[in-house]
Image 1: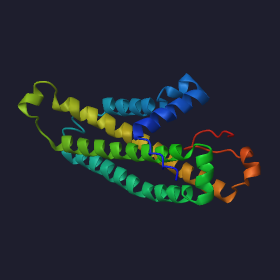
Image 2 (image 1 turned 180 degrees about the horizontal axis):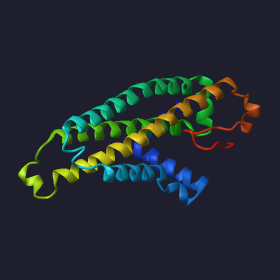
Image 3 (image 1 turned 120 degrees about the vertical axis):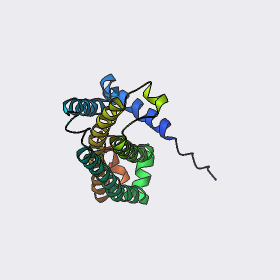
Image 4 (image 1 turned 180 degrees about the vertical axis):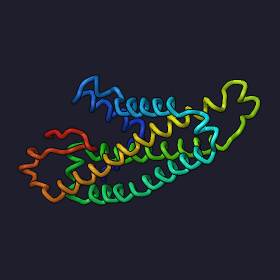
Length: 208
């Protein structure tokens, strides 16, 4: 009886995904453009938020970060509907055999893990920023190295950036689900399988 291969770790799957991107799209695909753009937006918004109208007014900052926690929490919860459908479709015998033959099963699992991680990070940053918005001073040892206002601005930028990034990949989860539904409906016979284009995690399609 053949042994069941071990599921690759998240890091291994990530490195494999990067290698495949490099092989298909070249060096420019290794640059995290989406993350950099989201971070730039977060930093830009943070720099334009006046201290006296936001951080010095907890009734404003607390409401903002409470809303961000709520939005990211709902996004995480609602995405599980897409995740469940993705796993359901990918586990169908005909589809899972196809994905295994073309070495795509690990990639689809990684895409879901990555989207989930992005959403957890966004929710975590929102929670950290919410806590910092109600703190009026830092412990003495910490305050000697960094100011509270600097930490608040970092948390604000990270919250905005990670929320936008998580939203982008939440839409990617919908794309993955739609792709699997489409190809489950039009799954060809083995004889014509090579004419089928597979969309991997919302990326550009290719012909196996």
